[in-house]
Length: 364
Image (tube, rainbow, N blue to C red; front, side):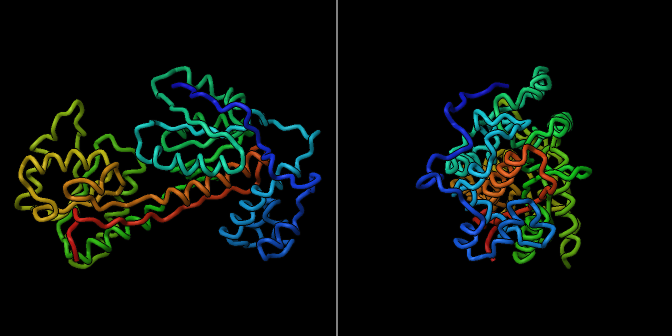
């Protein structure tokens, strides 16, 4: 675990937002630009929009324009004390690994979102084997004004500690059932429906769901969603779930792990692969066995991997809405920072992924 170089001189106030003579931005200014009422703007800015049924997209537009016009900075009382450090004005993101395609895919969008309002952005990794991490949780406010916890980096200890401190944070691609927290996640319920609907149109009946044996609980939930959707389709056989040991050090998948499912009696016609890393291993193995994709067996991935569109058989996959997720996360964490982590209303946002259809699943 380590802290990258932190951008110096950043703060939560953008110098271009004061306008001439330091004119104060008012609710009516925002309302006029958006074509809505001042009452609606007031409800959004005071975190009462959900109570009054104001649409989420309208809330986001109000908050985005308010940030751009410097409303939040100008409304802050200079004498107001806060339990959260207002300097150095950096939003941190804790991730389980920098090698995750999702992490380096969404990072440019987050950098752009925070950079547009003059806020720094920094990433740190959480090493589960580093015993120092838990001792550093309480010191995060010395480095960051707020935190984004991604995936498995949002463990129970970190969440409990940050809540106890009243510290601003948002969960990204992680939800906690028994706690109401600000979360932004991919809508895999809709994603699973899109995948199975497409497979049904292609006429596949024998489906193999492939996953990593060490997969996370979230992956297990995705598998259950796929099985539910398959069971609702007439003519589709009950899917078979196979757990692979993802090879390391360049080794190949064990022949016994896959061959028996590609020949009778099961004869899998298509493989739905849960993790992007497993797709590379399976594609490599099939190529060495002279098995063609999609002619001999088709492939669909529930994650997008680097270079999927450039592979010998470009891989059909679910593509996460990175731009939309980054916008939601930046709006949420900015609201939390403004309210010193004590916002009364928490939002759980799920955004549907896109199905990128390529050659690996065949054609209709």
